[in-house]
Image (tube, rainbow, N blue to C red):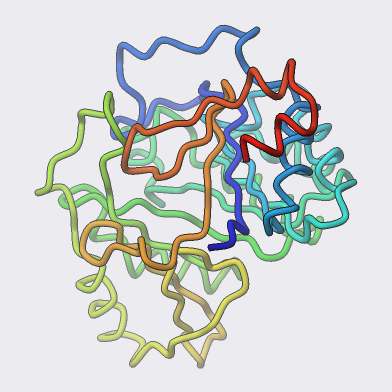
Length: 288
């Protein structure tokens, strides 16, 4: 099977404290253990031999890493890489968007778990206004597509589904609803009863907008994407709990300290940093 997609986590640090994501006792990776941008670019170049065409920069929060646009630029110099995206919480996006655009970033996924400022703060300890400003700036700069990731948590924000759809129509962005899922060991603030099956959310949307039309969306990944024809709006559903998508997965993940992770739902990892720092190109190719 070809591996066409690599998610690159450039840092474990974040400027938010979402209760479902970040353990209270989290210990951060020492700076010297984190891969340098040149090492990441070397790995990406080597992986293109095996079908890699698309990369996404993630974290933690990628925008807390200094000069992150330099990594975007290095990746853009690799001819085989057709698409470079970033997933961000958007808190400082307004300040970084122009540099990222000039460096060659294609697309943005921005995480928003509530459109209510007070609830957004309760979930993340951040300001919703900062994220909205980042979206506005990114739209003006021509980022396309911009997708909004909303983790749906039963009893907390699952009553905002229609608000998110209206937001997507107003701002011209795709909304992606994501079922809450455990993220390996250490992420303990997860219980099955916090999961709201997204089929229920889909039904609620259809009650207001009519039947959703299945749509093929470039870069949709694990999402099942639908359209609301009247508004030319797109909505995606990512269902790792109620309808797992493992069969169609063709992605790997790279951790900040240089380990290749085969699946988000396990802790199985393959260390590659030593080869990147001290091995030859032949050594790297053998490991891949």
